[in-house]
Structure formats: C-alpha cells, structure tokens
Image 1: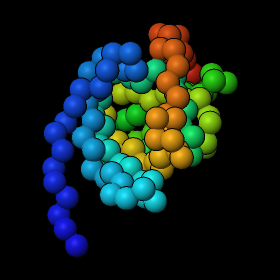
Image 2 (image 1 turned 45 degrees about the vertical axis):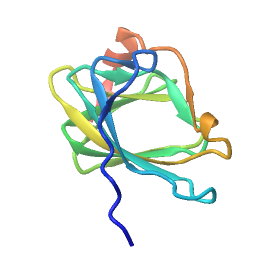
Image 3 (image 1 turned 90 degrees about the vertical axis):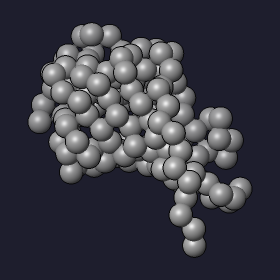
Length: 136
C-alpha cells in the first residue's frame, strides 16, 4: 500500500473547454494492464466542455453544485450533488456548470487500448445547445 502523491490542479485547454475548468487527477494507472482513471473537475459558472465521447464510457459523480449534461438529440439534463451520470462508450455529450453557480464532479473512466484515443474531442457547443430544454 502507498499514499498516492498529490498532483497539481491544471487548467483545462480552451480547445476543449469554454470558461474556467480545472482538473485534479486523483487516480492513474500504475501498470500497463490497469485502465482506471479518476479526476476531480471544477467548473466556474457557465463553464463547459466541448462535445466529446469516451471509448469505454464515463461515470460523472457530481460532488457540488448542479451540472448540465447534453446529448446530440438536444436533451439537456441537470444532475445535482450526490447523483451520478453514466455515458456509454462512443456517446457524444458535453457537461457544464449552470450559468449562476460553480459545479464540481469526479470523472471516472477506463483508458482505451491506446490511451490517446480514450477521449475523442469535437466542436464547441453553441449557446443554444447549452441553454436548451434543461430538465431536472
């Protein structure tokens, strides 16, 4: 057993995120046969990801605030602290903070066989996509 070293928080790149989004890695593979990663991700009000998908899916557990998640069908849902959202492998989605509050979640996923293909980043979401049809 060992206590993992603390990794510094890193601001996510503007090519993949709009607004201030910080990530702090908390779980990373130690050996080639391990795939699990986890990170604490903090979003400023209105901050959001670009469209993306994950080769093996993703779990997002909201730890503070209210998160917005959107899919290509136009559905936008709000997920509250204590709730977990699952996105299946290959499903395009985005996640964001609400316009008026901070949000943080723990992102859990497994790396693809080629770690560089774990997440496929796409275009930024539009204001209409971010604001459309949120339901609790």
